[in-house]
Image (tube, rainbow, N blue to C red; front, side):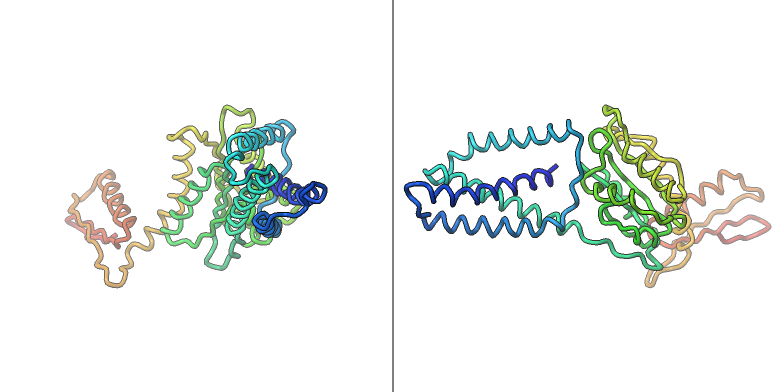
Length: 338
C-alpha cells in the first residue's frame, strides 16, 4: 500500500514542480524568490533520486476495483487533513510557497522510503553445496516474517546452512538450486499476495521449469473474517505441486488472531523432525575446550521402556543446550554405552 501511495505522490509532486514555474511566469511577480528557488531545486533533486530508485523497489501489483478505490480514498483523506491542519503552519505566506514547502517534505519522506525498500530488496545469495535449506516468506504485517526468521534460526542452530528471503527476491534459477524449502506466507485482503510477494506471484506463473528436486512445506497465515482465507498460501501450494515439487506435509492454515494453534504445533513438530536427528548425531562429539556431560543410571536386568525413554529424553535435552552428552546404562549382565 505504501508503495502505491508513494508512486502517486511522486507524480503529484512532479505536477507541483511543473505548475509552479508556469504560475510565476503568468503572474504579476514572475521572479521566484531565492529561498523558494533553493527549495525548488532541492525538491527536484530529491524527486529525481526517488524516480531513479523506483526499479529497486518491489513491483506493485494491480488491485481489484474495490481495494483500489479504498486505498485511494484513504490517501485523499490524509492529503486533505494535511492541507487543512498542517499546510497553514508553513513559514511562508504565499499559497504557492506553502504548496512547495509541503511537496518538498513529502518528497524527502518518499525518498527515504525508496532507500529503505532498495536496501531490503537485496538479491538472495545463490545456494551452495552446504546451503541446502531455503526459508521464504511473504508478509504484510510482519508476523509471517517473524515466523520465518524463527524457523530459519532453529535450522541454523541445528547445523544447517539456511537462506532466508522474501518471495520477491527469488528467481527461477535460485529455486532450482535448493533441495528443501519452507514457506511462511500471509494473504492480503481478499486473497491477494502481500507486497513483498506480488512480483513473485506475477513472474512465477510464467516459469516453466520443473522443481522436482524440491521438497517443501507451506505455513499459510490469514484472517478467517475474510472469505478467501489463506488464499495466497493455497495458490503457492498448488503452484509448487504443478512444478512437480514434493510436499513434506499438507498445507497448514494459521489464523493470525490465534496465539495458540494446532498449525503452529504441527509446524514446530516438522522443524523438530529435521533438527533433532542432526543434533543427536552431533552430540557425542566434544567441542574443543568443552568437557562432555555424563549421564549414568543403574537399571534392573530388564529395564522398563519408560525408564529408557526418560533417559534418552534427558540426553536429547542436554544435546539441545550445545553440550555433548554420553549416556551410560548398567545392569548386572551387561554394560552398554549409548
